[in-house]
Image (cartoon, rainbow, N blue to C red; front, side, top):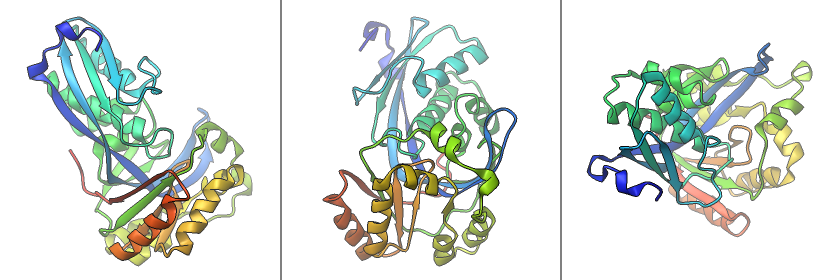
Length: 298
């Protein structure tokens, strides 16, 4: 660990960074700034990275991680978030952050965004900065579009480019089975291939919010929708195959999360969860069975 001699180990703190899934992703329009105007209902799940944050005497940000292929410089959202906090508050001391990576990378599950949000929340505590959740979310919006949601956690409607957050009640409790094929998906390419002027699919976010407010599990499954899904399915047939397999094994609802490539299935009963999970394990290497967290994790 670089600079280990100047770490203040007894003052370290640990922060959990849960993954998210998109229950809906409605693309409304292309914005003048190059982003897309979107509405998304997102919720956190019980699959999480864990960050350990160490103060250090030297005015420097360093990272290490349990996976070797994650960049540990200013390409990393954790580094960007730490640098932003230091610059915003004029912090002259440094920090070392260890990332225990459990969320698949580039999977549509906001792993990097959640790590950045955890960094902001952790440094807020470590350095006694006194930011409230709205201030931390605003800061996070400068790192990435999903970081604001990840600061709030729980379940929420995200609007704008993802930075305008309206908390929602937790969805009905259920199992979430995730499967990520061994491919990478470029979010920019997926959005670039989306033809909004030819868009025919209905928006689902309002229907999803109503189902959540009724605590209607069947309604939640019927309201699942992602305008990016058809684009990614066209580009990557493996994603379509996973979705079809989940439905064949009896999932109550199936959807791709974000721009993909991870697909998730919802199952109300444990027996059905086991059937889907076991049916995917020989077909796809990265398969997880977790619960919806749903409630705010602050």
